Length: 544
Image (cartoon, rainbow, N blue to C red; front, side, top):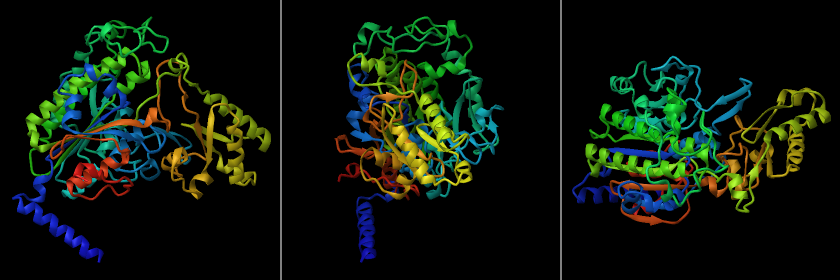
């Protein structure tokens, strides 16, 4: 019966397509452009709306399908897991990218999300090039597109951050490129090829980073028009090197001459990302044949600026007003090159961010800084006093407590009981909302709430033995700037817009999970979803 229903569906689809004079392939875009903005809160769209031009964010919202209630459905909300989840259609519990860093029990050290000692840098001789997608254990929509086309579709990933380029591009990509601050060049690794394509060398020879960093960062508009932001000089903002106040103009050429790594904190970081992405499109001839190509772009600069200044600074508003212009220019150039009728864009973010806790407290909102080092010291002392001398805590990384399994066995202790004891102790610290043990997470299934989000972010081979969940408003960070990582809406609520080929202007307020993006793209392309997909197809894009 199921087979007959499936056959009926195929015949109906085929009849509908051919009766309209089109083949199924005619409905596919020639180019998909994925835009991920690092640390973009949803309310940056609405808060700065009156300042945006007509051809950037406003164009996407008005002419595209705008999803106003899109959230990450797991913790931690960081860059690595965020990019992996967007493109794999699943959560860290399945794709394995549990954070930007985690403790590796085999290597007995904390490892970085895309580090790979088996590859060598291309375009660099430094460790910046020793990166690959090897740690990700599922496919991405990028991989499935390559496989479905018998490797004839092209996939390119571009970001200042290596993880922002590598994870979206997937395992089978033609290339991923990221920025090396020491040289000001775009680099890659031997995972993809042995030498940079000539178009990349041509771009690097232009020394665009040095050129773009010649001018101080001044506000795009007069500062007194930024009424949606706090004053220019507040105690919530951090200083750049050799500054005495966190105020405009930020004179990088004067204060840090020749420091090309600082482009990450400058509007020019978005400019050079856009320019390199467009150069990749032209150099690789993306969207020029019958096989759908994918260009995955991640704008990293908003994250650097957000960490430096927080979510309500003039700097963050200025970054978004300028990014709006970059996106408008990029859309115009891509549509001109590939044909407006041939391109599908989607825009989202890898996580959001909380306002600076001191900013919140000054407005009588519960918030603060959680001292995780004090917790680790107290826990280590307690375990040594209770169970005997030893280094019981191997690491406390991103609120995951990694205990020494060999020491537990050596002392003939029951691991589950020790985990519960640790969990009870941690619950005694002010600011800790919940604790969950490895036993809790692998023996039970949580269907809703924060515990469910912890479980979706938990991969036993890489995660810790006890997980700490803080109360709302608390962060583990310095007192200036801000960060992200929690299960609360200030970190999970992000934009999502589809715009371009076959997308009608509409708005959806229904809750959408970030993991729904990849299976939706698979449906559009008529290919298999990524092999670990747990997200669902967004029916509203198909008239449902």
